Length: 405
Image (cartoon, rainbow, N blue to C red; front, side, top):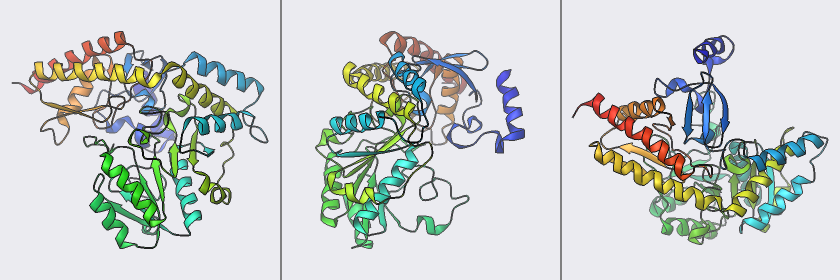
């Protein structure tokens, strides 16, 4: 098996053979580590097995793998140049597109990863306020830099000393956190909904969103929305726009360029000056190909109403999974937006049932995940979802047989 061979070779030259959130060693036993290609809503691993893909490369692929419009834009830019002595004109065009699309955006700055964007946003907030403390929801994931990585290995306590935690969706907790560092709050950073791994997802309560906005105004702090994971799958204008809540700063990445590496911070005009004072840069941050891909991705989502397509296919998937679970005698919860779904089994505290079921889904050609949210793409058609539901139904049957009545 090519995957097993590659894992063995990797162990000789890569610490642990693999690291980070793509490390298949921490998933169910049947998960492949290495993949050969993707097309539309499908991926093939190096051993030739085909999967209907509901992880979408952990979020970046929003239009489908190798989307022709995006690939054409990237190839056209690559033919002209990518990493040059300065950015290409497409940088200005992309920034203009973001400002035109996102009501809370008067300007944009670009980088490569979601962690870059969240870190950069907090730097802008601190530059603007002259303060140090950041209010952050307990357990929230904002990236992999020392200030926010889920693992403390290789970090120091000082790198997290300016974080003050609160409970997501609790205004009382948020107010209490602010009171402990009164006068020194630079920012409130929050995800559009609670998408912590290993837990049911939790949609934001509109009153909490509005309360966070009001508190930031009262404190003179920046409200930062980390839209890295949810951005461009809920609302092109920003994930809290539906609640009438506009942030001061937003971090974007993942789905922004349909798999090409790019991230952005957008902000309000009042923070333009502080943003200009930062020294925040990278040799590859200004490469033009990813910017061309991002421009094509956002325009395609806009022109084809891609988010509505994802909502329809996500709703069909959710309804089908509920019916199947009930038919096989399982009680399940499906949480989060239908475009960023997750399924958990009632009473499955150790996730053993979810692990077995997800492994069975793999054997039946459906790639989902047992403890991380999934992602829909605009490439998931009604037929694709129907085909996937055939596989998940067999997986439910296999799981019931494994567990017994």
